[in-house]
Length: 111
Image 1 (spheres, helix red, strand yellow):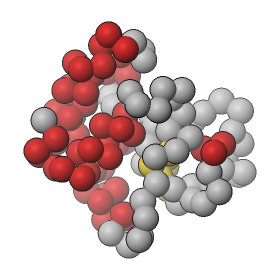
Image 2: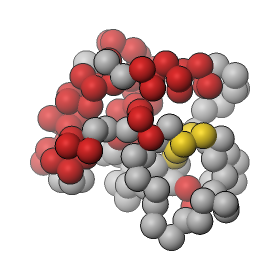
Image 3: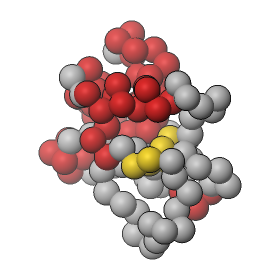
C-alpha cells in the first residue's frame, strides 16, 4: 500500500475520488478501480474519524463481499508478482486500502 506521491512503480488506485494535486497524466498507476472503493455514503459517514474505524471496517467488508469490482481487481492482481494498492488518505493504518488488502489476503475470513 502506498500514497501516489510515494511511488516509484505503478499500482492500482483504489479510492473513489482522484487525489487533489496529482495530475492524471503524471500518476504511475496500472488501473483506477474506483468501484472497489467504499460507497460514497460509507466514505462520507466515516470521514476518517478514528472513533468510527471499527464500524467502517465492518461495513466496508460487507460491501466488498458483494462487489464485482473485487473480482476485477483480483484478476488484474494475478497477472503481477507484486500488487500495490494506492490511496490518498493521510492515515496509513486506518483507510480503505488497509481493509481491502486484508480482504484480498484473507477473503471472507477478514471479518
